[in-house]
Amino acid sequence: MQRMGMLIGLKPDRIDDYKRLHAAVWPEVLAQIAGSNIRNYSIFLREPENLLFGYWEYHGADIAADLARMADDPKTVEWWTLTDPCQQPLSTRAPGEQWSMMTEVFHVD
Image 1 (cartoon, rainbow, N blue to C red):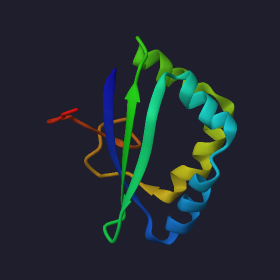
Image 2 (image 1 turned 90 degrees about the horizontal axis):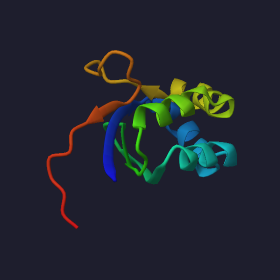
Image 3 (image 1 turned 135 degrees about the horizontal axis):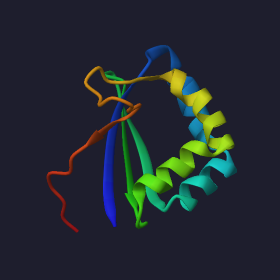
């Protein structure tokens, strides 16, 4: 299992939209997340900075293939057309990233 952390900004005028969308995530999107071997997925909001922190655990054997399959899923792509405009990617993100991936520096069970 691999723990993943990621960070992105949230546009102040889109906070309510983002919360509304995530209060009723489409079943097809949830199924795609599970089918991509992602479990224990949470998104946290820090206000007033308007930062989103995402955490999930990857339980598969080929993360690149699983994430590519997710990115090719039509319903997930449609979902992202609603959520992405709410987000403000960090200026320091890596090329091709929407969310900025983070490095784990500590863990304890």
